[in-house]
Image (cartoon, rainbow, N blue to C red; front, side):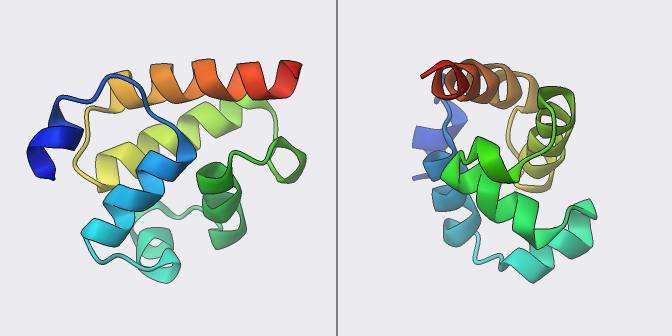
Length: 90
């Protein structure tokens, strides 16, 4: 599984959730590490724009989550934001 997400180029909220669960981190543990409200973490994983602030904050949160999960924050944040923007446009 680790090889799969190390080489992954496209990231969604579902993928971040899978890695968090694989690493056995709860919302509270991820909140302690990142200082991000668990409500926002859930909304990021669900890619729910109605429960998230403006995109610049979402990007920052995704970077913090990727860093906490040991992922390539640049690849994850750029890919996630592309998917997120598409979701907002629809």
